[in-house]
Length: 490
Ligand SMILES: CC(=O)N[C@H]1[C@@H](OP(=O)(O)OP(=O)(O)OC[C@H]2O[C@@H](n3ccc(=O)[nH]c3=O)[C@H](O)[C@@H]2O)O[C@H](CO)[C@@H](O)[C@@H]1O[C@H](C)C(=O)N[C@@H](C)C(=O)N[C@H](CCC(=O)O)C(=O)O
Ligand SMILES: Nc1ncnc2c1ncn2[C@@H]1O[C@H](COP(=O)(O)OP(=O)(O)OP(=O)(O)O)[C@@H](O)[C@H]1O
Image 1 (cartoon, rainbow, N blue to C red):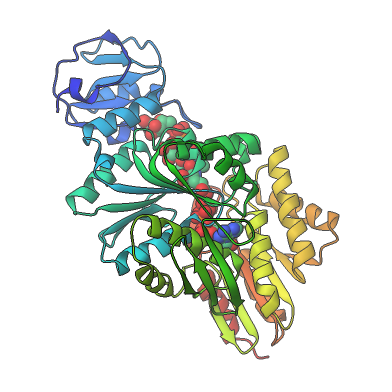
Image 2 (tube, helix red, strand yellow):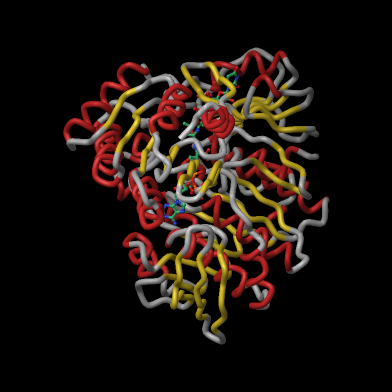
């Protein structure tokens, strides 16, 4: 492709070289550079991509896009731009010829619920015999092929490549989880969204956003990028703030909720452990919905999916079937073992709000104690400490016994993480035991449980590894729990 074609719309200064040439690919990592490619240097969080320019040139980069006035005696073209992440997004969209112009792209953002809602929407679209791709925490799924990705929302270059692949596979719809990181770091810039969905906003990722207002502003950006529908949770305070902001936009506002006035609402809700039945009220009709997951959060998540499908023209009977066909979602209140009132459940709750909602959902069905196994992933900044405090408060006040352990400590010192969690549990007078080894913590919870107890193993959900330092160790909490149960007699 001609370099001038991929530079369309980009403001740049030519530091050296010729822009009239052919290029074959784009890379933002020097290790991926091929002959005749464009290398975009990004000043990262851990290293500076500008330090890899020489290595990119050695590998065959003929064009360098940088944020600084780079000097080199090599025969390459150097362009300077104000923001290389934004430039990467624009040239990638140009390179793949703006695939989102031809896709029905649904973006979903918020702290919790994104993955669950994607699964409901995917099931409804499949019921409607419409092809739909997924991009999110679990990876990218195009035509039922799973491509593992590092981030919930991949980098712009990878995203545009995935969108182009969807069109090649005749996939017309794409459901994408849009993280606040992606919105802040321009990964989704120059993507055209048909629909935006907002779930909720509770403290998380404050290491990047500094405070809740900044976190909210990052999420709100998605609703400036949509053409047709902005679908917003009216039960969430930040949702109401967002709805108020976007109500006069050209993109139509749709609200969903249980407790507040909403366009798509749920009434007559009947909860049980294995499913929830409710009436969904749309502007034109009211029908019964069966969700095969317990608790209010899955009523709300299914409402978001219903709103999206309904306003995208899918008939209500198809929507009903689509929701009903979701028999469970991996790591979302997943029942690993159940015998009468005794239950072992794995859930991805890793924020204060999600943990509270998971325990509150299980409480009405627990005949005995709720034994919680959980760990906190947070740094030692003020916001990180708030997360230790918040999760310990929930554990202390809502669970009967907590076995505190490690989640994915990553590069944080496990001893410090345990110490912070213990201090926070003490502060809230929690009943707890501390077992840093997560496998031993799960085994212990099972060994001390009685026949009426519910054990909730929270934090890792669908994950199959534990990250300690730079090591990623295989870790399957379902197998650990089942092995411990096999050795137990009540
Ligand atoms: C903090 C953060 O968001 N980091 C993201 C960021 O990395 P970075 O800019 O810091 O990269 P870096 O390692 O400093 O390197 C800078 C540049 O040098 C390049 N480089 C590096 C080494 C080399 O040899 N050659 C080279 O060219 C790198 O490719 C990069 O372009 O850009 C990378 C490419 O897009 C991301 O993969 C990476 O995500 C990391 C893995 C990450 O953990 N991100 C998390 C915080 C995140 O984004 N999470 C959200 C979802 C969270 C949620 O909802 O729970 C997500 O969307 O995944
Ligand atoms: N609507 C909701 N409100 C609050 N908590 C929720 C809601 N939906 C799900 N959760 C909780 O959050 C956890 C993660 O859910 P889910 O994976 O759907 O969210 P997510 O937004 O994709 O999260 P992440 O971005 O971390 O992957 C669930 O296991 C559950 O405990």
